[in-house]
Image 1 (cartoon, rainbow, N blue to C red):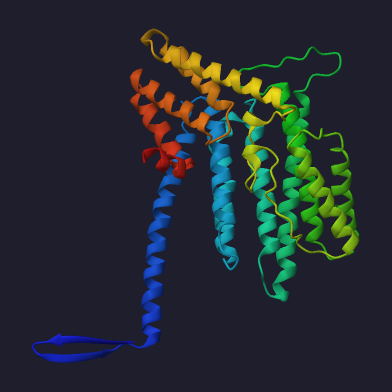
Image 2 (tube, rainbow, N blue to C red; image 1 turned 90 degrees about the horizontal axis):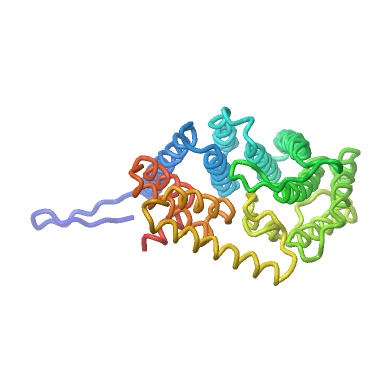
Amino acid sequence: MIATRRYEGLNVVLVVPSWFRRILGGTLILLNASICYGEEARSVSTARQMIADSTQPASERIADTVELIRGETLRCVALPATTPLKQLEAQWKRIAKIDLLVNDLSNAPRYQLVRFQFALALIEQGKQLYRTPVAATARKQRMLMAREKLRTALFMLKDVDEEFAKRVPGPSSKPTDSDDDASLSITAITALRTNLELYLAKAYRWQALCYPAESADWYNSLGLAQEQLATLAGVPDSSPLKKQVLSEKAICEQIMKQRFGYEPRISPTLPILEPLAVAPEKVDVRAAEPTSSAGDRSGRQSEAHRAEEVAARLSSSPETRRDAYLHWSHIEARSPGGSPRWQRARKARIDLLEKLGEQGRADKLQKLTEVLYPETTAANRK
């Protein structure tokens, strides 16, 4: 690179070596990346502080914890394939520490959602280790690490399923489909357990890919995946989950037929449910009930519309603003995160907190919304 400068009538030619230009450019890129990372780290730190605030409702803290685990996992998955292992491990440790923020809620009805989401994060970490290209000498160690991640995820999913099973009444019990915001309804638990069974099959399949092809462990893991999928044979054709089950079954059969381990060239983002459409999948009770027909969907949509009308009517009167806040919280809890209805409910809650004189809580809720849904928040500002 040659640069010309003029000083008091003299032309001065500066010769800058290409290696120096590359170093300078790389330094600027790293500096810019560190600044962006610093801002992102501060935002996440703010979210952690708000989640750890024990004065907030338990259901809100747990929902925000699930969102934060998913957001951090997405950032980890987005890292380049050449990212050093130490950097990946540092990110994984950050994710592992998130659930410590709600340790005081370990007995809360919805706490198992945090463990469910963390298990999905472990599956993504195992997949990331499998996909990362490394030298043949380091490949064996990576596969050992990936299998450990997947083994832990499998153990956690089974444990969560057992906890869910305890809340489903037996044949002699009287079912109670509670709408309490702090609890999980029987319908939601049943739908979550169905999703959980699919994730068990996926985890077994990825575990198989991390073993040497045609080894005993390879066959055993694939067999467990297929057994798990067999339990989902009764999923109705109208359920969005059906497509995922058939896709996973086809993948397992293809791997078994080819008799070698490989990463199937089938999209991992086929829709299960609307909130679960983007990998890593998000545990979301709010849309867990599978759809059955167009009439049912329109009925639920009209019911949701009526609920918004009631909440808006209560919001207009100072005497009923507390009731309105509870209504909007209920609507938000039953809407997919980031959806238009969810955004309306979140905005209404923030506005009502301000009108009720609770500016501190309103500011915290606004900041947390900006951290968890930056793109949505920016679009609303425009």
